[in-house]
Length: 441
Image 1 (cartoon, helix red, strand yellow):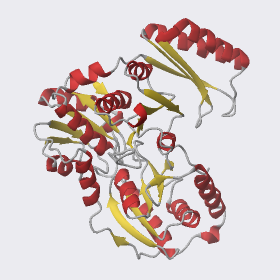
Image 2 (image 1 turned 180 degrees about the horizontal axis):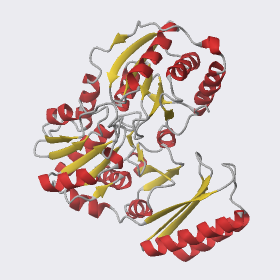
Image 3 (image 1 turned 30 degrees about the vertical axis):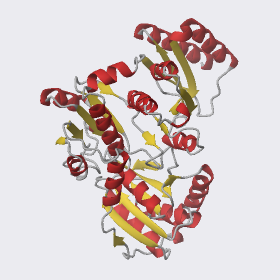
Image 4 (image 1 turned 180 degrees about the vertical axis):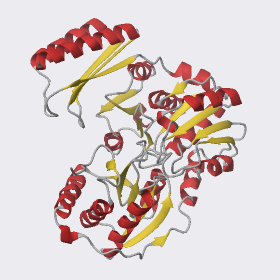
């Protein structure tokens, strides 16, 4: 079994599949395809990270290219350094996955995600190298340590809020025992906020374990018991944010996007009065944007797709329900800490009541998602299925939405229905799923 690139790099079980040999070959492939005479490498807190990171650094050095080690550091920091230092960037991380997985995210010089053609060339070269046992270079340790990898990045976040203070804000930050564990507190305290930190003691195996952006239950309780203004839940490599309002309610990526879009629009700072969303963005976000006369630009799932559309210049704000938000004016990728600072600043400027602001932003429509197994990932939506989708859309009218699509990663058809009423949404989704099952049986 080998690994292939997904919507955000490559990841898999480590070291069972994603091992030193794999990342060595990947490093060689990346240096051959991308024009970079210097590479910056970082990692998250997984047990497998040091060995994989060292293999990556060694392979880059072996190619005669300068390799700079940043150690444990958030993915967006590497992207920022890649931009300002015009270097290639690599992060050894599996994002929100458990510690048993690891992965590699690659940034081209300038801090940008890879173009499809670049990714395809790297993947082709990687597979060639993996099949050639003589292609593995010897280990060498000529990499250097970055003198201060977080200084300029932190300064850029302060500049994003025009150097305003966060004094008066009480923030609880869940670091997911990940790469922001040693950075989040000094960043927010340096901006004047009162900070309570949780899940910031990584041991190599507790990254994302019942904590962070995918497990916000404990953060919700702590925010309420501490009387905090906002809770901020990061994932393992800190490129996404899920927030918790003062009343313990969830503020997911859609709701954050709505809050930011309307706030920027009120200041005439929202480029083209437009925002980039994905096909999975909640119907409530679409409705709220329509009511605010803000245009939504829809793209497939994946922050690479959001970023690609932002780089077209039609908008400078976009994001996903999962908490990947991209402020193109300030960053080249999702940055959970940047989003957290901007959200805290917004709350302070708007009256310090995150619960009221989040509640007023949009109505969250119940979203039911069902997976129907199929024989292969190449399964196509038939005419009969399409007709049934159209019938369901007619029944829901302007008060709901239907999305049926083959998964890009699994042999399943994803059926998603949104409606004002959860029972209605579930019933329509189940009916569609049953119809698809009967069609393929």
